[in-house]
Length: 269
Image (cartoon, rainbow, N blue to C red; front, side):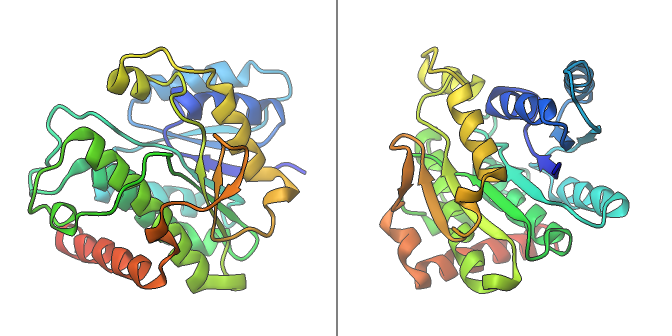
């Protein structure tokens, strides 16, 4: 049975490899990217794959929360049901990491935008959908002064904190919605895979991207992930595992979500 799947950051890296696999299985794919040209190129490439189904493109800059909301609205205007949301898009290095209103764009793109997108699309996901959030082996405690735009962070610190943060809100929403909501799963797709981000961050070629793509496809579709809401899959170990201890603390997860909501109220209204 084919699914309707939205994957952010689908024009390169793990996202691109993932949509290639999903296209070959005939799923309806809603591709997100920042570049319209890249989206059109990927759409054309996927439609040439034997067995490909419907392939649509949606352009949005996830650092702009108005565009995140518009992305969700464009999908909701066309679809009444979304089976899977894969929050794959992320950033590590940004030339100017602070937004005009003083917030760290690594947190905006990696943590807050996927949270907003997920909340907007929850009515489409219902109780049978899945939300797959890209976490990382790099996880470190959130500095709430930095999260609120009051202190600078270097690239590694911002990335690791943003990835723990998306893991924490995954666990919080799983706990909050229970059986009434979709499945929320945080996934470390594998360390040092051959993505543009890894090359920019560490200067290494990295391992085969298919390692990450394969686990995202499994998390999106396979029965082994059907009843694991609020869990973390560590693909470096090939199994479910404990994330950073902060994500296992219900009060800390609630604090993180409150901080996300506060930023949203300040910069998005």
